[in-house]
Image (cartoon, rainbow, N blue to C red; front, side, top):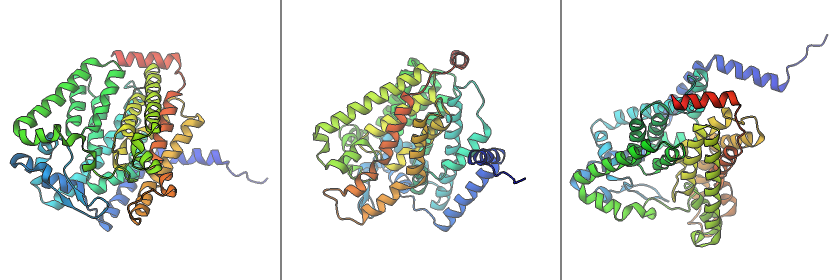
Length: 415
């Protein structure tokens, strides 16, 4: 008799089984390749250098006069965070540069594991222990997503803040601890503040109040220590997006960035901007409402964070580390077998794992200041916005859970 070859689904199942059984080895291999890549191509973490060199100026004045000169199209890098962030970064000035880079890399990779572990915990609504093999495999894979790579290469703080927000929502039982974690993250960098929508949507009003108290307390502390720099930031620089960088660049993956590349620099004055903003807001509201109704905390959090990245004036590609929890939700959350979920997951894999944005950046940097922006770059440059839109659609269209699972989730929330 002729031996039958295994079908494609059978081979796929066999591969998944093998990876699950050898998840630890997969993570070890991923970390080894990462280490070899760092040794072969040492990163130049410019953002970490800004944190290190600018932060002492919060005590002596001139924090927002600091400039790190780099290459075009962003020839200078200023310090763009609130004064409290400079206070947090003060210890970075102490260790030697090489030691600091190693420690920051290690902390960021550790934060990646925290992000995955806490996202997995939210997937089960805290009613189950995280699936060890799933955490190991997603950590191994997440290490190679473009926003994560970019964060590691630039020495950015995104993974640390993402881990802080997820840990605050997934681990503590008390409202004070949940709110304080979010509040401190928002005091360092404004973008995590969208997590407050998660607390409001899930009716954690006491935690939301604690988040406001923590943010206000951290901001007040910075104001007492550095009143001049605090006044400069909060009364002027906080709304100066031009100081951060060119919004039209493909590096900016927000809705505004996508529209400026498609329609030109006056896109914000056109009705399509307001229509797009209204559409995204309505879709995000529907997604969050659906996730709340289905007792899906990770869906709620992914929905509000993706919405924040879309509507922010500037969302550099390294801000999109939230694509990792989004991909986990699409792969393991309710409705994971639906075609829309699989399409959204494939889109994220193509854009983030395929490193589309760096390819577009290299093409953009070879052009003079693009006006009008080339359509062949503008349309692919909407990648992260399209992925976020598809993800919000998937969350909004999630199916109802079974009564047994719903009862278990309610019990976990009340506990």
